[in-house]
Amino acid sequence: MSSDDNTPPPPTSPARSSPNILITGTPGTGKTTAAGMVADAVGLELVTVGDLIKQRNLHDGYDEEFDTYWLNEDKVVDEMEEMMAGGGMCIDFHTCGFFPERWFDLVVVLRADTKNVYDRLERRGYKQNKIDENVECEIMQVVADDARESYKAEIIMELSSNTLDEMEDNVEKIAAFVSEFRRSHQ
Ligand code: DAT
Image (cartoon, rainbow, N blue to C red; front, side):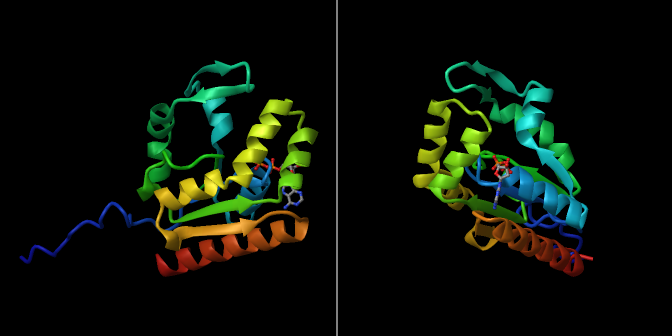
C-alpha cells in the first residue's frame, strides 16, 4: 500500500462539509447583527463568544475600569474545541488572534467609520473610556492587523459596515461563500 493511501487531511484543511466562519471587528462595527443574519440566512450555528464567556465563566475576573471581563483565552479555546470540530459554526467576537487557525474557513473583518463606531457605542451606553478605547482600536486597525497576522490572506474578507445597505451586501457575500463551500465540499 502506498503511504499516500488513507492519508488524513492536514490540520489546516480539515474535512468539513459546512464551513466555520469568524465574524470579527471592533465593537460597534456590526458583528453581532451580521452574524445573526448570516446564521439565519444559511443555517449556521451562532456563537456569540462574549455571551459564552459570561455564561460559562471563561474569564479571569471583571475589569471595573473598562466594564469588561478579563478574557481567559485557553478556557475559551478548550470550551469551543468540540463545537468547532463538525463545522457549520458562525462565531462572533471582537478579537481573533488566539483562535486556532485551523478552525476557520472564512474570517470576516467588519470595518466602520469612526463616527459610526462612536455613535453606536454611545447608544449602547458604554462609558466614555470604553468608547474612546474602541474608537482608537478602529482607527489603528487593531483587529484587521490581528486577523492578517493570524490567518492566511485568502480566507480574510474585510468589509465595510456603515449602512444598512452595506450590511445586507455583507450578509449576501458571506452567504454566497457558505453556499459555494458546501457545494464544493459535498
Ligand atoms: P458589534 O457586535 O460589532 O458590537 P452590533 O451588531 O451590536 O455591533 O451593532 C451595533 C449597533 O449598530 C446596533 O444597534 C446595530 C447597528 N449597526 C450595526 N451595523 C450597522 C450597519 N452596517 N448599518 C447601520 N447600523 C448598523
